[in-house]
Image (cartoon, rainbow, N blue to C red; front, side):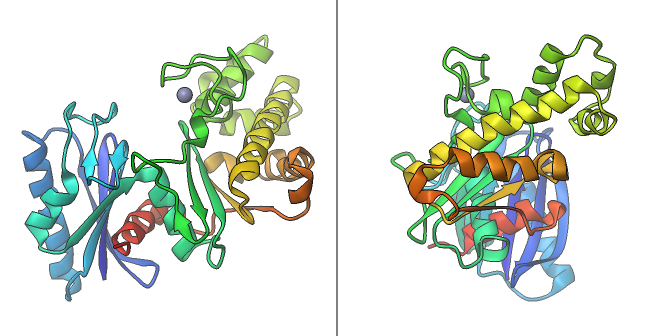
Length: 302
Ligand SMILES: [Zn+2]
């Protein structure tokens, strides 16, 4: 059994995982603690109370977090977390729980989870892309998670897709996630539509619904999103040569609006040696459990 911890901006999830299943889980707020030590204490208490209910022991702890450096086990000045200094969370959890603790970037954790337990099983060359508020990604190459020099490689969302394009939260311009994320799609719709009634609802389901009703701007929003995403994914394939791309997130469940045209555009955009040889599929993990399974998969690393 492994404890998986997923650190989010407002809530952190804690779960016990065995054989690719979340046996038991709970959550605590990420904010409102006196300091990072009090937060780590609260995480340890949550793990121990789950263990008390479940019975048994854990072999390791895996923690997925934004801005995590897997080499050092430190969360480095994450913009969306309460602490503006470095937090050595891997060591803090090891000290509190007495087992190996591995901290990793949340997008890389998602990729590991998909590789170990989901739609990426058996694929030693894999790309996993999470599309939500932003775009996160993790690369498995030659049977290994790619970490790069700083322990957090694989930021497909911050690949420039439009030179001098939209301003990104990272301070640069034209990043893929400024076009393909929830925020990006809403901006695309806002640029294309005269009336913005549709955007009164949150998320992108409202755009999908409008497209189903035949709203021209909404249909074009999906078309443009598919075009950017297809090119972004094809560029990534040219570098690491995955055999499969797994997509995760609410947007990719927009079915025929996104996935079917994406598969076609992606294949057309691929370097010729890859055409017809890379498939795109949607995550096989339950939405609610994916982050915890990914975090737990980190715990299986040495
Ligand atoms: Zn960016």
